[in-house]
Length: 203
Image (cartoon, rainbow, N blue to C red; front, side, top):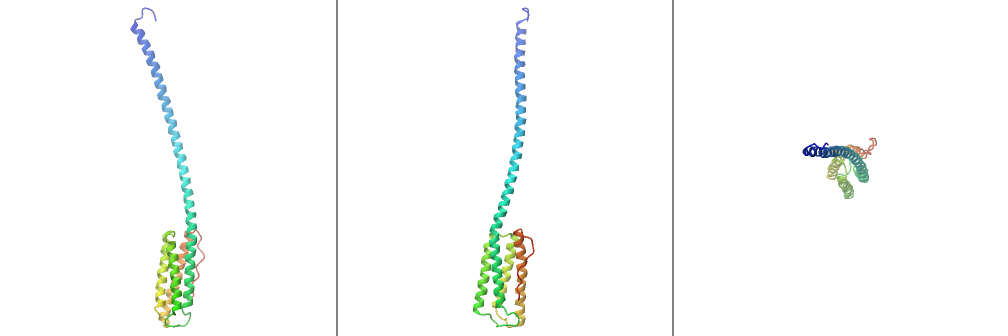
């Protein structure tokens, strides 16, 4: 500037230059910060999506592992229950007269065999309580309670009465339907197609 320029003008110009430089630096910094913020937001969203995918994948893996573990736990328990039921059926078929009325009261030995077979069903039923589905647990309980009533009616005697024997045989045959319901529920729990039926009680 010329020597005639007032000092205050020189100072003002200098100050404006400094202010402009500072303002440019501040604006640059703000814009840079906004870009970094946007980049950070995008990166955070990306990480969130990646974490969400990984979490879903882990959940699916855990569900598959849980299903496999439950299947491994259930299979031997269900198998044992069905075996104990088959043994109960076998004892009942041996104890009950097949055609004509028999003795009024079954022998003490037959009573013992019936009680032991039913007790084995009860033990197997209790074992699967923690692992069975609600439907299978209820189906097993229905079978067991009906089997208890059959046991009581057989032990009460009167098997020499054709009408009473007929009623007992009817109750025993009804157990086959309970057994079929139980098997259907078990197959569903294990992911098996419906099809095979349990052996019907031949009374």
